[in-house]
Length: 93
Image 1 (cartoon, rainbow, N blue to C red):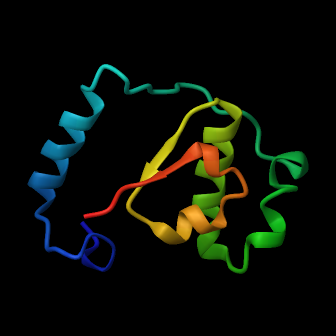
Image 2: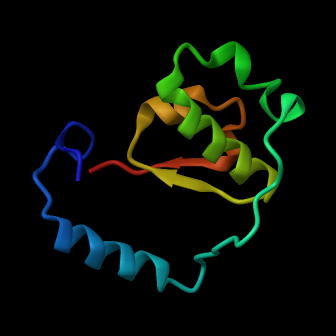
């Protein structure tokens, strides 16, 4: 819904509908459990993190890598943060 990221105004109801469509895709995977986030997990990311606002992105990137998944985002900055390019897919609008 962030117009700075998707470059359009999106209503919450429309975003929820899109999320429902994306999560119903046969290739979608939901993980109930998360690997631990400790020193080893952040070793590759720590040199790239410049502020506290990147910690959520770092956590998601770590989870994608550990679970051998792809993190799909509109956020180019998140992709730039990742040392694991094979686990990030940036969508463009």
